[in-house]
Each structure stands twice: as C-alpha cells, then as structure tokens.
Image (cartoon, rainbow, N blue to C red):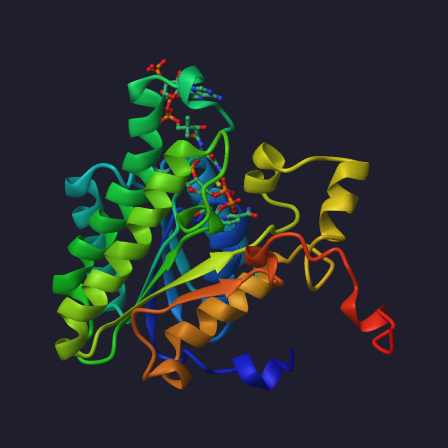
Length: 269
Ligand code: COA
Ligand code: NAP
C-alpha cells in the first residue's frame, strides 16, 4: 500500500478509539494518528492504556489515553467530554473493545455470557450513544469492529456470536437513524489476524495453524495493518457514501473451506 494513500488523509481530524491498549484497535489508532488525526484511546487498564498512548507519542504522534470501562456509560460519557475539551469536535469513533474465551454453553455461567455481551454489544451501544453530542455534524464516521461470529454460528462461541450479531444490528440501526445528520456508521469484520490476543485465545497453534491457512481463499491470516487500512478508508471522505456496511477483511474466510485449488483443476475433463 502506498504511503501517499494515507498521508494527510485525516489531517485536522479527531479520533476516539475504544479498546485500544493493544492489538488490532491500537493499530487502527496508530493508522489514524499517522494519517494526521489527534487520537484519544481508552481501555480498562490505566497502566496499559497510558503505555499505549506513550508509545504513539514517542513516535511523534498526537495521542492521549484514559482508563475507561465501556460497560460504564457514565465513564464513557466522561471520556468523550475529556476528548472534546482537549481536541475539539470528534470526527471518528471506533468501537472495538471485546472479551472472548472458548467455552461450551454448559461450561458458561449466566455471568460469563453476560460479561462478553456487555463488553462487545452494550459497550458498542454505549460508545456510539455517548459520542453523539460530541460529534462533528455533518461528516462524522463511526466504525465498529465486529467478527465472523456475527453471521456464522460457532461452537464454544455462543457469547461472542450473540454479542457480535448484536453489534452488526447496532451499526445498521444507527446508520438509518443518524444518516440524516450525515453521520456514517459501518463495521469492519476481521478474519483471523496474526499476532493478536484474539487468535492466541481462539486459534489452533503450530501445524494446525498453518493448516488452517490452506482453507482460506487468500491462503494466509491477515495483519493488524490490513484492518487499520480498512478502518482508515471508512473514516475518510473517500467512503463518504458508505453507511450501514459490514465490511469483511478476512481473505475470503467467511465462505468456509476453500482448500481445493480450482485454478489447478483440469477443466478439459
Ligand atoms: N470459561 C468459562 N467462563 C469464563 C472463562 C472461561 N474461559 N473466563 C471467564 N469466565 C467467566 C468467569 O468465571 C465469570 O463468571 P462467574 O462470575 O459466573 O464465575 C465471568 O466469566 C466474568 O469473568 P471476569 O474475569 O470477572 O470478567 P472480566 O470482566 O474481569 O474479564 C473476560 C472479561 C472474561 C472476557 C476476560 O477474558 C478479558 O478481560 N478479556 C479481554 C481480552 C480479550 O478477551 N481479548 C480477545 C478479544 S477477541
Ligand atoms: P485485544 O488485543 O485483547 O484487544 C481488546 C482490547 O479491548 C484491549 O485493548 C482491552 O484492553 C480492551 N478491553 C477489553 N474489555 C474492555 C472494557 N470492558 N472496556 C474497555 N476496553 C476493554 O484483542 P484483538 O484480538 O486485537 O481484538 C480486537 C478486536 O478485533 C475485538 O473487537 C475482536 O472481537 C476483533 N476481532 C479480532 C480478530 C482476531 O483475529 N484477533 C478476529 C475478528 C475480530 P484492557 O485490557 O486494557 O481493557
């Protein structure tokens, strides 16, 4: 990807990124800041979020961090006020805080199910709902990080499947309700992304991990930058007519097993 695509794309804009002390969301925040945005990042751990913000600042980027649990609406609203006071009206909001673990329904308490639904789904509602009064209107762009579990049932993932399905509907409903204010609301659905906590918790390791790549149409896991670039595009004016979209950035993995190579099949037979 050419650097020219990113350079200055978000100059003068303000971005608020939830769940950004690590992983994919921190890389999205970095992409936003590299493109010129002033960035506020939040997550639960004061220590982790301040270290992440310092890492961005050490690279010459404009960033601040605040500890905030997305399940706490009052605290989320306070974080938006702090961001707006420091940086001004907010152009971009990314909601990506999530929790996950593998467990069968019978190995999961009601509180375990609720915990993941509260972080992923209620958290996304809280972040988007609390952002409204601080958004630049017209023109703000809201992006949720969803997952393939939203549309594809998976064993040991009943909590995440239910939560991310809800996230997709939050995105579509807000796209309808807030479109007249020219606020765009979209989601990015990452496939398997290497070097992340999500994959460490959910994916096979060793030979099984390599084998899993051979089933993906593009034959590889994605990178955090793949998600960063998709979120950058959605946040930019280049996506000005896109709203209510759930964009797969997954190498085609949504379609299931593509291990046969149809380009090598002898079509004459
Ligand atoms: N299997 C079954 N139940 C589990 C579990 C597991 N592996 N891990 C946690 N739980 C249950 C707990 O037992 C508890 O239920 P209980 O009160 O009935 O005992 C409930 O989930 C909440 O756990 P708690 O540790 O109090 O929640 P938390 O809010 O501190 O942490 C988690 C949230 C559990 C999602 C934690 O894994 C986390 O912080 N994850 C963030 C990072 C992450 O998941 N990244 C990947 C994103 S895709
Ligand atoms: P990660 O590094 O664990 O990121 C999750 C982030 O959310 C952390 O910064 C965590 O920081 C924060 N967080 C957790 N609970 C929170 C809460 N209650 N309030 C505020 N922040 C909270 O995991 P990741 O793998 O990069 O996943 C990032 C996103 O991508 C998630 O939405 C996930 O569902 C999605 N996704 C990932 C993959 C993948 O392959 N990894 C695939 C599809 C979708 P604190 O601990 O400091 O709170």
